[in-house]
Length: 164
Image (cartoon, rainbow, N blue to C red; front, side):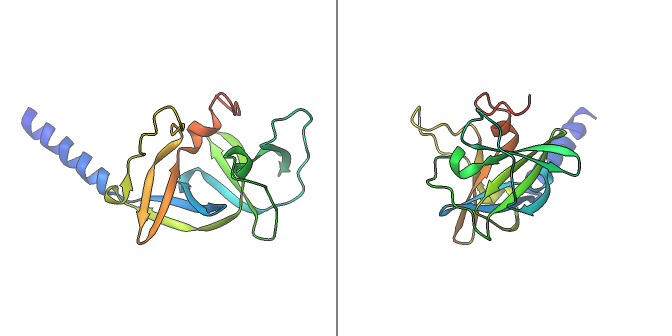
């Protein structure tokens, strides 16, 4: 009976590993990133943001989203990807992270992609040169490579401090 239970558990783990996870893909500069689609609440155009005094540069400010005050983070500034310019393609992805609503500004949203275990590679080690703690892995689809972000880990990091 014990052997049968262990066998069923192993089969369940294998089946779970082959289930495709869906990611919303977006652009920052020339790179494409992905975040788990289940964390996304909505996608909005870039609109007027109320600035907060003494906030870090990457925190653009807050917006009132149907009565909820939502902090807005510019990911290009956070990741040091050059000058942030806002145009008609710039969007805000509203995330729901453990009940905390946060918005991230990105250059544009691409699509939703399902990735299975074979399409996700582990994050390469860079030693102490580059912090890869927020990267879940690298996804490959045809000739595209996606940087898959652990957005909850990023938003709860000590330098962000947006929620615990």
